[in-house]
Length: 181
Image (cartoon, rainbow, N blue to C red):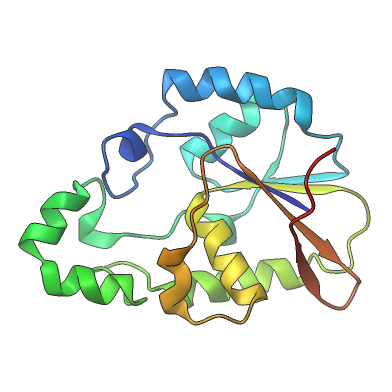
């Protein structure tokens, strides 16, 4: 399964906590370059969030929207500049870095649980599959595959429009870091 990270949004560009912002113009251009490297897929899923849906559309793909793959909820921090949260809610921000939920939002364990449920339902699926999601969803999937603590969530960088490859033996998922040839 290819996990394709959605393109860059204005929230990414402006260092804000994510919200349902559209892709940047630069990102739309980069998606068109990525088109040559993806597919064909036997099944495509997408997060219901605008940037994931836009990325899917710009890739010329159609995918099934899956609520379990949505961007984490950032509660009252949604769309707020990260620098502002660090300055005004430093202690809560430090707790969030360790895996806690932002005020009114989801913690990392909740994101991992919903993605784990969805991924376990795909383990026996055949063919080349694809999910187009946010970097946060990919990080949640990676740390659970590695059985890493929730606090490691912030230690993984997933770049917009990058691809993470998973392989299944029908019983469990494996992270595959094989380069594309």
